[in-house]
Image (cartoon, rainbow, N blue to C red; front, side, top):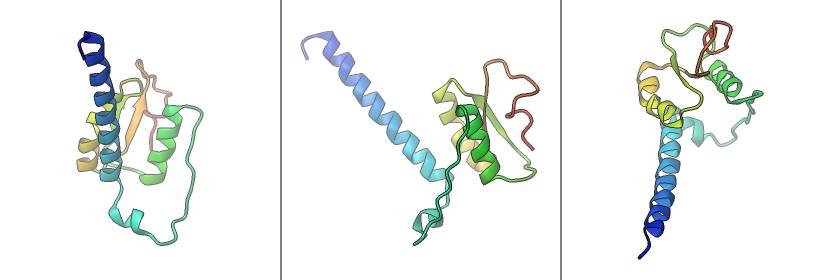
Length: 112
């Protein structure tokens, strides 16, 4: 730890672990506890061509039909998206990812 590089590497590893832990906690906050307690869960894979499409498919599955609130966040800023999780949970709103310059035709904007 005599070199400054050693401290930077330690902080980077520590920071990565904290981010991973925060993501796990955020995911657990989004889903009800009884979903994980099911004895014979039915697994359905949701996916898209990219992160925007995948998040759109997840939102459609978890919040089908019309919703009162939607949280839009950049698909490029991990911290921005993570910061929106508590707000989305409070408002019972799906989180949708949008491009840096969202267009009206993007799925995040056209969400039902």
